[in-house]
Amino acid sequence: MLMAFKLALRNLIGAGLRTWLNVIVLSFAFVVIIWHKGILDGWDRQARTDMISWEAGGGQYWQQNYDPYDPFTISDSHAPVTGTLQNMVGHGTLTPILITQGTIYPSGRMLSVLIKGIDPAQKILAIPSAMLDTASGDIPAIIGTSMAASSKLKTGDHVTLRWRDRNGAFDATEIRIAGIFKTNVPTVDGSQIWLPLSKLQQMMLMPGEATILVCKQRNESFPAAAGWKVKDLDFLLADMNNIIKSKTAGGMVLWGILMMLALLAIFDTQVLAIFRRQKEIGMYVAMGMTRRQVVALFTTEGAMHAVLATLLGAVYGIPLLALQAIRGISFPVSGSDYGISMAERLYPHYGIRLIIMTILIVMIATTIVSYWPARKIARMKPTDALRGKIQ
Amino acid sequence: MDSGHLITIQHLKKHFAMGAGKFTALNGIDLTFDKGEFTGIIGPSGSGKTTLLNIIGSLDVPSEGKAIVMGKSVGDLGAREAAMLRKTKLGFIFQSYNLLQVHTVYENVEFPLLLLGIDAATRKQMVKDALEWVGLTDKTSSRPAQLSGGECQRVAIARAMVKKPEIVLADEPTANLDAANSHHILQTMEKLNHEFRTTFIFATHDEKVIGYIRRKIFLEDGKVAKDELITKS
Ligand SMILES: Nc1ncnc2c1ncn2[C@@H]1O[C@H](COP(=O)(O)OP(=O)(O)OP(=O)(O)O)[C@@H](O)[C@H]1O
Ligand SMILES: [Mg+2]
Image (tube, rainbow over the protein chains, first blue to last red):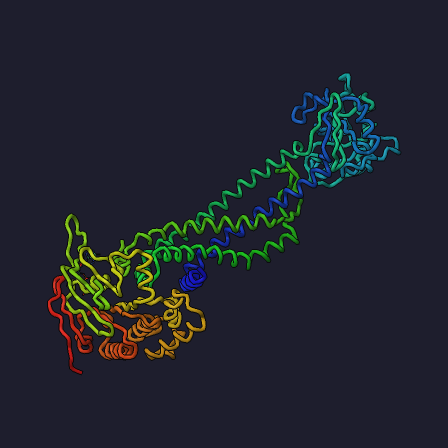
């Protein structure tokens, strides 16, 4: 076996340019898949952490009518926070958010917004609610940078806000932009403004009421509460998971094409080798190798492409990927284009499992395409092979 | 059945499928060979020399009759046993040398020893000896492409002889060589034949080879036409 390995390596290296071309293409396949998966995994991790800290918390309670995709139900999606839930709020393990719709009129334009009331003292989400100081008597609001950009609002600006209270009556007031925060999570930023919870409750005539309640991170107990539905993290992050999955699938296509190219080249090399090296095959048999051993030798030779590709891929791939993992990659697109959290600088994450799995898949696939043509040797007559007459 | 000969060939026939019918390449051969012979099988192109050599070398099997090589009937050997016979007892020399182009002279000669699983130290000594026999000790790390035809064939002889086989089968070993190189090759083989009593069987129609051999077997249309021993020199 060791001999076959040694011999195969000699033959392969001896074949020169052809070998290296195959190895280079195969190593690209290696590095590209690891790189691509690494970026997605890194993105997944970053997006998860961001979504959890800015929006999802450790899970949420939704008022039973609440459906974020249905704006018509929003006016019915609120209820008083009582009993167990109220206790949890008291203990700081839950924070209530009241959500409603409204319109702002920045510099004469009209913009439909979601109004979210949040407790300025809350510590559960990363939303900088402490900026919502109510000391000055007016109504402070905070917005994200992307909202600020689309509404052209700056800190200190005043803007008119119009809303309907619980009885359906319109009302309007002036609010003051008390702060602008930067987040990677578009779903707490675009087309929405954050007000102090108690102010919004007053405005809506809904004292003590909320639309959703966000649990603190790594919260483990979700006691049932009548009129409220528990939404765990799996549910809250499902959209994000789906988007990442579809990105993964897209990348797999690219990888599949690269792999196919590499495997085709190796297959071709093997088929050619078996035609061109008939006399050599005959010689191996004459020297006392069984045809099985010759098949094994040629298969090993082909499969060795994967070994060389792993080494070559490691030579340029490790420094390249490591550098990116440390320095991060900056993306010109903003996360809101994807509808999920995306940092400006992504840190790819390369798991050992991913690397081992990739190497295994490439090894196995290479061995199969090498073995396939080599089987022909087992049916060759050594006398024909020696004459080089096989068609 | 065991006649005490190194090789016994009895009523040997070899047919090849040819379209609908068959072509008879060997048509009833009876021959024996003994240890230490230096014999040529001589005949025109198509007379069946290579076919006979291949059967003796257990690369092919008889269609009828028997070929018994060192007590083993070639037609009855399994693939493994035939490979074992070739690996341990037989050496081959080909017209076109058939060296591994990407390997050095040393590695080419070492190859049969790797197959035999001989340890590295012993291997090294054996390769060194074999290269000495053929006078190529100064070319060990060259590759075949850098050698002349005569040198290539000497590498092939070293490869065939390195494991000190019982029988060396050489199919037209001088066909690609000029006169000077042919003589050199033949002298080398003659020397090894004397030194180790290795049996050499050539297939040839080269006059130069005929001048060295001590037994001439003339083949014509798959039959032995003449079998003569040369006793002089
Ligand atoms: N595998 C085969 N299939 C069909 N016919 C074959 C095969 N091998 C040899 N023959 C035929 O058998 C005959 C003898 O062939 P062989 O190669 O033994 O001749 P040879 O004496 O070695 O000739 P040469 O001097 O040209 O090498 C030839 O007519 C050849 O065409
Ligand atoms: Mg011939």
